[in-house]
Amino acid sequence: MPERAASIETVEQFDAHLDGKRLIVCVGPGGVGKTTVAASLALREAIRGRRVLVITIDPARRLAQALGIDGLGDAIIPIDLSELEAQGVEVRGKLAAAMFDQAESMDALMTRVSPDEQTRQGILSNRVYRAMAGSLARSHAYLAMERLHEVMSGDDYDLVVLDTPPARNALDILDAPGRLTRFLEDGVVKWFVTRERKGLAGRLLSGGGAAVTKLFGMVVGRDLLDETLAFFNVFYELRGGFRERAEAVQAMFREPSSSFVLVSSTETTHLDDARALAASVGSRRVALEFAIFNRAYERLEADPSLLRTTVPADLDAQLEAASAGISDPARALVPALRAAVAKAAAANASAVAAVESIAAELPGSCVRRMVPSADHDVSDLRGLAALAPHLATAPRVLADD
Ligand SMILES: Nc1ncnc2c1ncn2[C@@H]1O[C@H](COP(=O)(O)OP(=O)(O)OP(=O)(O)O)[C@@H](O)[C@H]1O
Ligand SMILES: [Mg+2]
Image (cartoon, rainbow, N blue to C red; front, side):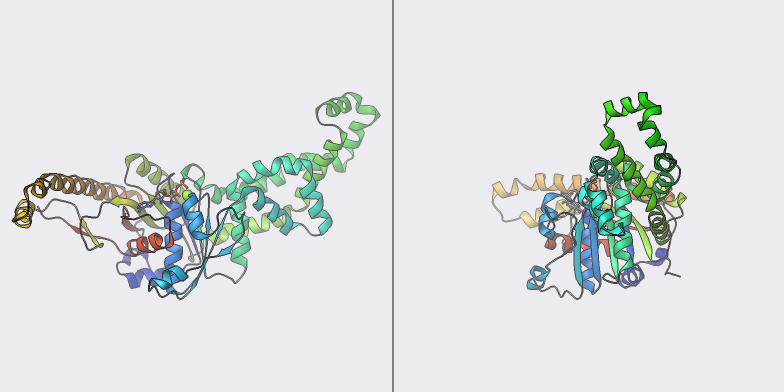
């Protein structure tokens, strides 16, 4: 049994818990920092010594560039961490990244599952497949699942961190396998395939079905109808493999070595989405072990682990003492500084309250973390590394008024 997440307070406990994980899936509302958190966590684990793959979805351009995966289709790219090493970070493991390029992922999948070269050629050049590849692949989730199956079946990585598209489709990854299997088993595919097997298509297109022939001829043409039948036929033939992999991934999501991480901001609309997501994850019997509230507070203290929620009562006296002896123009800045501190402290207090308000809706064992707005850009390795410690430890709340 994995250590109960509720007991995770220290970095050591966090590390020990993560050591037991092989798969981490980041879900959350749009734009809250899922991709950033996924990349930061993956980098942290690579620095600690694990062989990590982060699979990102539509990363912001600058992050993709920083990871070296910009414009490289869906290939898995080893990330060069020497820049961090040059800054004195001891990197013990390895990081690789991939992003989803939907059409390429679909082609790569069909290439993998084709039993022979002829089938592969047949599928990839099939016009119906080409037309449908985009929409088939639009189910990001399905491809993500196949991709996951591929990397998790091998022994190249100790940990895979999977990013997901925004909330609306976040849980497709949990539902995609069933949907695809149903499509293959009962849906259109079977209809086409059975009819082809019975030779109905042939009959339709010869003498007896003249009207239908004409109709098909007008709409798609005989060649295209043949290609349609061939396309569905191939899918039907491959259905066993699709189903097996789908079931394997479904089982994997529910293993103790898999964790879902909910990422949210502390804004009301995002928190509403986050609550709904937490409930849907739970109802699918998948463990939600971490909730990360990103950009949840402004740093007001030099110590990054401190989160100040109120303005200290003696702030005026402190400012007065600090400004003694400085010039009048500089002294004139003091009220503005004071106002800025008060504003940030009020925002931090309401963020803490917002995080507490969602506590009841999260599983009791769910570890909650608040991550500050970064002072610097988080779209490079350095920024990602700077964010990581906040994922591991909860900030200490400092409230003195
Ligand atoms: N803690 C942070 N401090 C400052 N900026 C951040 C922080 N976290 C994320 N960002 C920035 O916020 C933006 C959105 O982050 P990100 O792309 O990770 O969100 P997302 O949830 O993956 O978005 P989408 O739903 O569109 O995929 C990025 O520009 C990122 O650099
Ligand atoms: Mg993203």
